[in-house]
Image 1 (cartoon, helix red, strand yellow):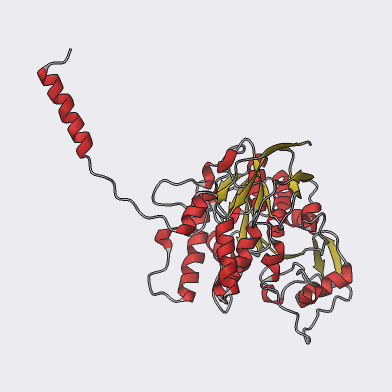
Image 2 (tube, rainbow, N blue to C red):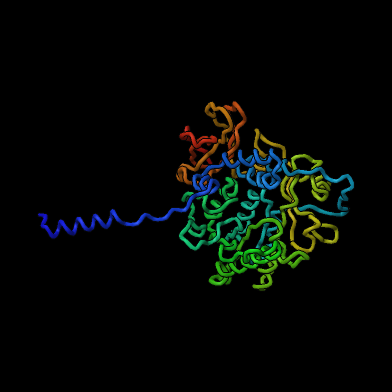
Length: 423
């Protein structure tokens, strides 16, 4: 029964609720909105348009972003340059080639940290990282850290350390991990029992405003080394860590233009990492665009799988830039496309080739296969750009159950099919 006092209290409470201040809202920029929504196509088309208009920065960004969509032709071709006519090929007399995975496993047997790099426009490097994960796990490696993982934020945010196998692999876990190939690598790491860890520099670790490029680089490399130590080794001094980074971050000695992550980590911990370079050793789309050292290795050995090449004196063949800076240098083979997909995907024995029907559509469209247990929140397990009028496509998927959908410039079409990929 309502009393006058009870009614007054209720009314007062209602008044307080109505009068509560509205929280300030921060506008979401277009790029962030697309990432939060798991969208790819609008940004891809925007970068294409800017590149066509002559924006050089957009061209390099498009090269990396196209890899996320499985568009290897754009990812590699848009930045390719013909090899110089006077380029000097290395002398490979007496050199030998060995299987890269065998050489890595042998070299890693007594190491605590293994560092592998990538070029950010090569999805195949991320697929190779998955193969390395498999070989290192039986040796006792139990942590996987990647430069690509989003750093720890001052406010609550999805963190890679919280990810568990079978959960949705979120777009918010990183930028490059929005590449389905990279996402599948991380999913596999979780299934294999690796603990996942970020080490990228945090917002509070950036160089002071107005710092030049050398200072910015130094702050970032220092923070990366400090973060890996704090996030893993400080609590787990015997942890064995596989670290995946980009380009020169894997250099383990100071250079004339600065000291990189691997070198700082080695100096601070006293741990000598096994450093592996693959970013500069991959064939281009056209043989005439291959780097001189890549052309020489392909001509001499015609590899059909990743290899490491040693000179007769035991020295490692690789990109001259990395000479004396890394322990091993992985060369990838030139593989012909298979059913419209890159040959290196066909070489992955863990993937199955699945032909699927595609709904009729006008304009650009992106075909996506999503892990059914993850729903729409997860990064696709595979995706590819469709050609105009394309009604059938080939997906490369690991065994499991998937949902198929199309992304168009204005949003997602409803899921149109489900497929089961047998073991």
